[in-house]
Length: 116
Image 1 (cartoon, rainbow, N blue to C red):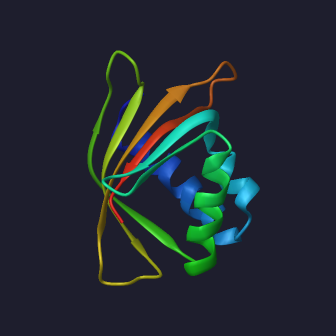
Image 2 (tube, rainbow, N blue to C red):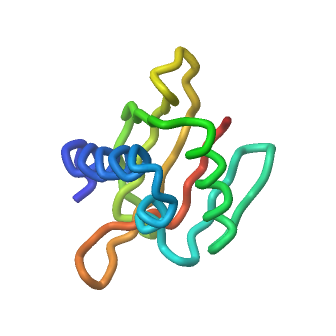
């Protein structure tokens, strides 16, 4: 499934959840034991991600992802690399999202690496 169309759909779902301002809805895009890493600034695991997402959603109302590359690895079915913007601002922040297929066929983020 590691194709651009599939990755684009996953990112559009993330963007839509972010736009609702509902932390729980956005958190549902991650596995319960996911890890988020802001390169050089911090790391969050599992439930700690809730606070990270809430902080992002308090300061921004919109996130937009640009895709640079879509790949897969033995450990992750979908790996998406690119940059994102917040509130249509000019600043671009790099990210890599690592997705794993779940038992129900859905794909959830197990690792989110970004630089903000």
